[in-house]
Length: 160
Image (cartoon, rainbow, N blue to C red; front, side, top):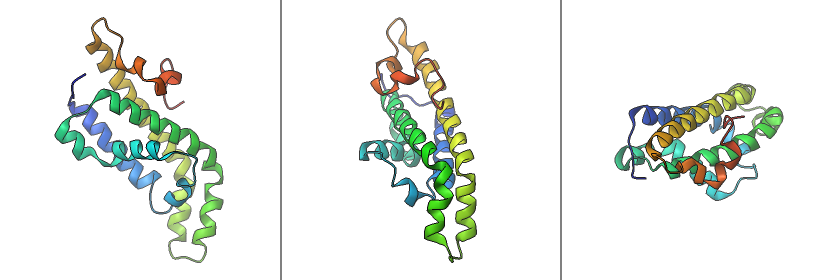
């Protein structure tokens, strides 16, 4: 499929990136997240989705690449949900006595709900892409059905 540019997709990707940088991978939480069992390729895919919107604005989106970025985000969400309950304890070790402790506590306290907001936005992006993909496939198998990383999510919400 050729690159596409859709204003609603661009806006959603911008919102996803802003939320991720501010509430998920901020300076307080990032050190704990880097301890997750996630490979470099997955981190690179997440970074492309959340931090390189200019690239999409210039080149357009390649739907298969965005699907892979969604799949990487899903791996991250799954791994981060496991550590979310213990995140506050992990962060307190590094910030005790620090002037940033209150901010770190807030980041840890809100992490689980911010992660669910992120998962909801990823689900919205996936749903919009599937709708667009299905409409454009015209009798062919849609691209999302050809992405092995998404096999577990084809008939269910991706953030589940």
